[in-house]
Length: 236
Ligand code: MN
Image 1 (cartoon, rainbow, N blue to C red):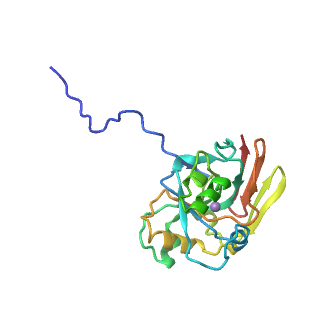
Image 2: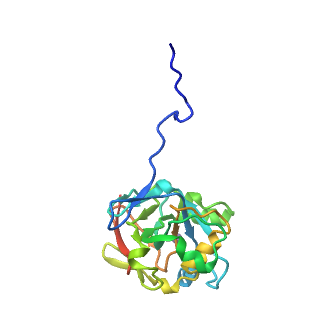
Image 3: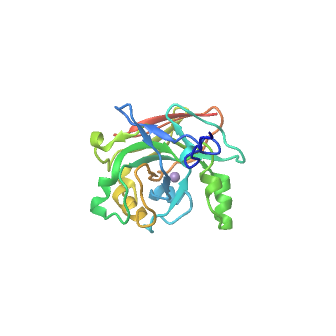
């Protein structure tokens, strides 16, 4: 007699693995849902990119969750560019779903924080800007989102001040402070949750301070956010 096996839960090929990040002080993994990034969130970086540093509504773009590279990993020099830049950022890790989250409840949705790099093919991003095209080719490419381990907010609280810095081959390239963020963490969560359904597992790259610059194969990037952690990534 033929045994009929239900096909309802079978895949035509193995699904891609769930992207994750380790959670400091635990043996648990944080499963990544989406990656949002805030643009131009430090005045001096807005100025270095040729924009008005005044407070305009925040804007966001996304990266793909499978572009994460863990601390200690290698960022392979990407294809189709001659100008790939580092952008050192604090990353907010969302732990609770929400839509239209009010400002005074926003921090309840934070699981923790991390330090990350919003790697950018600046030449392709520049072309896209000029032509009014989307930014994906400049921003959402393979390995473009290195991120360190997640530190629980229950351990460190909600940092609103602290140096944001990046060294390349031991030379300081980027410096800023979380207190210079144009849009603060509760504001970015509240605003973003009016545009998208925020989900546990979402990461928000909060924007980069001034000093973005090109890297080349063989470089070592070491960056950090004081009070959160550090990340070391080699350029392949
Ligand atoms: Mn960025």
